[in-house]
Amino acid sequence: MIFDAHTHLNFEKYTDGERQALAAEIESSELGYIIDVADCVSSAEQALRDAEDYEWCYAAVGIHPDHASVFTDADIEEIRRLAAHPKAVAIGEIGLDYYYGTDDRDEQQDLFRKQIRLANELRMPIMIHSRDANQLTMDILTEEGAFSPERKTWFAGRPAPGSMSPGAFRNDMKMADEYSEGGLRLVPDARVQMHCYSGSPEMAEEYVKLGATISLGGPVTFKNGKKAAEVVRRIPIEFLLSETDAPYMAPEPLRGRPNKPHYVEHVVRRMAMIKGISYEEASRVLTENGKRFFGIV
Ligand SMILES: [Zn+2]
Image 1 (spheres, rainbow, N blue to C red):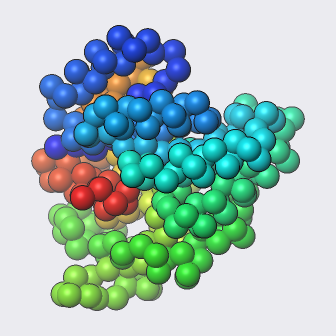
Image 2: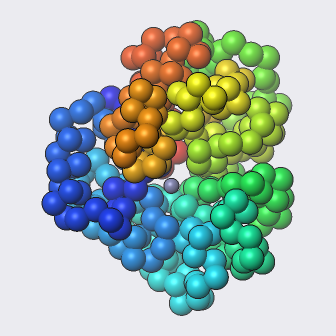
């Protein structure tokens, strides 16, 4: 079983027929769960309809920075209402996009901060989109309490490096805040997912020390994806998630085509290869990570 921790089954350009056909493909694959991610209120509504239609589908509800210049506080209230749905498992995707967004940067920050506060109020996981704004994303998350000691008390700890798959632990990363409970080695979890992480390996280490989880998709499979591959090498598998961002960013060998959630298989295969473990082992750990992160039982 494999896990897609960030995908857009609710994609607005799919017809109902296309969405159903895609769901049928997913059902005949080894994909066990998807997180269907919203970028605005109407896509959050569709993601929740998908989650009601399909047992394996869960929703993240939130407003993407692309919508920063048009959002209103009423939209945030609408996200708050939708987040109460039993299959809404995260606030996302939220964050900063300074690649596309050049003239609405203040609005982006305002929208981002308001939604971190909402996630804190609701005590929910946070799913981050960050492009060309690496340091500012980290600063705002920190300022708004996404890594606060209090937030970490709301969620169960996550396994410490090396405890889920000792064969995959090939680095020196030690966590200062490791503790043990019921015979398990754990570290605190702030439940912040860095979706399609594109920063440096050093910053990825800094993020996991703060309590975040690094999520990677198609770029780890690309020939020019050396930085993403280095992140997989450096970060203990306990702190990684697998994702597609479908219909965008299809992995090799399907690059250039519309992406699909079950293509996460290629991401997991590449992560297994980099970690020097079997595909089955990587699938198991990454699925457990996804279920724990989003509270799926
Ligand atoms: Zn996305």
